[in-house]
Amino acid sequence: MTTAPETISEREVLRDALGLLKDREQIAERLLESSRKHSFDPDKELDWDAPLADGKWFWPPELVSLYDTPMWKRMSEEQRMDLARHEAASLASLGIWFEIILMQLLVRHIYDKPVTSAHVRYALTEIADECRHSMMFARMIQRGGAPTYPVSRTTHNLARVLKTVSTTPGSFACTLLGEEILDWMQRLTFPDERIQPLVRGVTRIHVVEEARHVRYAREELRRQMVEAPRWERELTRVSCGEAARVFSIAFVNPQVYTNVGLDRREAVAQVRASGHRKEVMQTGAKRLTDFLDDIGVLRGVGRRLWKSSGLLP
Image (cartoon, rainbow, N blue to C red; front, top):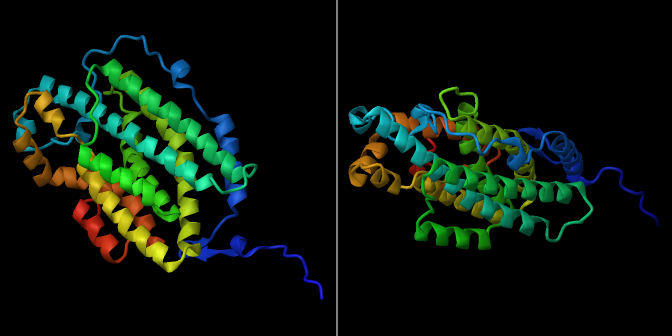
């Protein structure tokens, strides 16, 4: 007895709360085409030798951690702008650290997949993008004259464990956590004429290329949350929640306050008590948390961890 050849595989008719999942290869082909049309070489695209503009911010003041706190109101305009410069360097440092993790997770994801598939070719394209982004952020830190701000040793080692044991859906959930909040902030930054032209150029490049990365991660996470066994989905919920908690702590390195002449302990306390800061972080995370909620990631212990992070109301 012969079996009729399958014309539509089970994978092609998967469905979740958001509807039918699109074909993985078709998505990758579209992303590859977009990459061919809209990819940038920051070394050539940006004028790194241009003098910094006088009176321009390195980060929108409303996105600076101390904005609208009692301490902020006591600070001079010069000190506020200096804090923004250091926080921009802190966020860029965090971005580099995160992108190095992401590149490792992507390599693990494609290790046992067909090397000629569009899905794998796009992952390799994204890795190349992230290499350029990391070098671009490093160059921006140097050009701004602020130091680098590595995450704490505890966070660094927690991430080492996380990326070693992470499941595939956990990897893509954490990818979105690192990409979408910063992306929201950068979308406010690159059109803002108060900001240094170099910073606007860096954020514009990152926003354009990250849009593809977010689409790739979202589509794959949807697929994984349908296909993965129950234990893996549960582990993803917990690991994603823990990553949100760690990420929220690491978002701004407290050393920035010391480096601009502020009392570090008082600054950290005021940021934690700031209603404006809480609103900024939750607004930046809302598109992501709505998506994760829709596809079943924000449940149980994982949801409680997201709430403790301050990113979920």
